[in-house]
Length: 279
Image 1: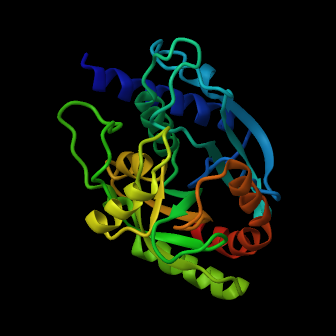
Image 2: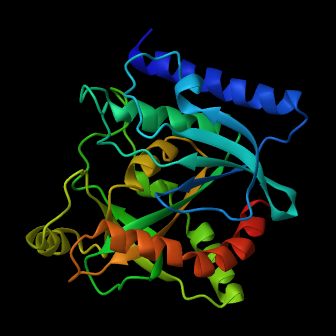
């Protein structure tokens, strides 16, 4: 078997493990998954089951240890809507002790498992930096992406994809509708991926704007879009919270404060958005 066939088999196998456990417990399989960036929470989420990633993907031994360890959570949001809540995994993550490992397998297997388990829609909540006119605190729907700085694609030999095909104009319109109902301002913008773990400099931002016309930059969104774009009849809705403006240098404590303070605006949108997406 090729590496692709092995990993595909592992993804399906562990998706079956997830669905069998849910069926055994008499729980419905979800159509919706939500990926939470660092610091984001779903205050109304009631967890029922947990699937630690190291246990779930034990069939592959070259996966880097994740620090901290992460898990897929199954539970319910209000209105008895079942969801799978997943962590974010960055492509630059490596074993913290040896520096080895390839996080592309984590990203690929995690997203494949969500799809194979029956999810057709993914909402990504992430933080992002502004490289244009957005200011800290803005909430932005990602309308398009630039792939120019993507180097470690979570794909196997012979595969190709167009990541923005996973972006859905329909879901973006639903998000806009939800924001109007929640009376929360929701903007739209173009996203560019930055590999990390180094933070882009001011000169980087200037060059990136000229090359891509992007307005947002982060170390997330694009890797997950690339995987979901391989699966027909699925769609992704990335929502980015701007944590630092174009003239604000990166400050972790500052960014974490913006994420914590965003709850009062994100929760009302999600309360309107999730029932629409779960139909």
